[in-house]
Image 1 (cartoon, one colour):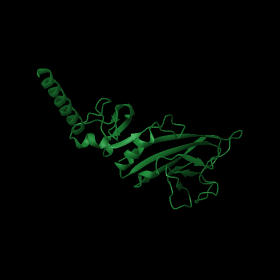
Image 2 (cartoon, one colour; image 1 turned 90 degrees about the vertical axis):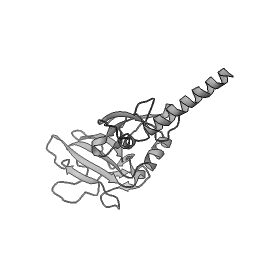
Image 3 (cartoon, helix red, strand yellow; image 1 turned 180 degrees about the vertical axis):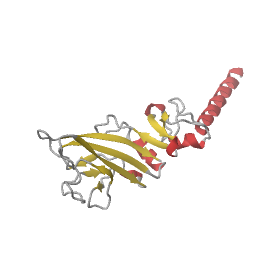
Image 4 (cartoon, helix red, strand yellow; image 1 turned 135 degrees about the horizontal axis):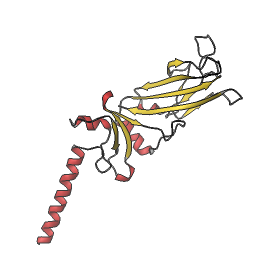
Length: 206
């Protein structure tokens, strides 16, 4: 009987700790938050940096390491596997839950260019017919003459003077299904004296 009572006490203690970990997540691998904003809502004084999240609150094997940007309201930011590719190390289930818990998402992509334009040509104020196009996560397109258009913060790739330049694209949407960007079309072919490379920024959910 004493053993039975001890097991009940252990179970109650475990459940109590489990409830506390859900109510007050620490953002560790052992006690992840659903999203970074949950850590802010718990009235804990948190610094921007690396934390662990588990959007579906499932098994611990699918927790995700993210950058929490509390300065910008508690953004949950996923970094690409490498900055030169549009690949993110997150499963579809966790991504879907992260989207359900978010109302806004933003991503920045920089294209570095050497003697090749990717948006505007020369002195033209309008994007060229060969301007790059961006495929959203849900299949929609961000393009110069489309319903969805990227914000172009700077476009120096039109300068062809034998030096490296860059064009900065920003994507901000209240439809979390649209980001991250999964493909880029109309990138210039590699030729002698003409090059480009990508710098893929994190995708940040809020």
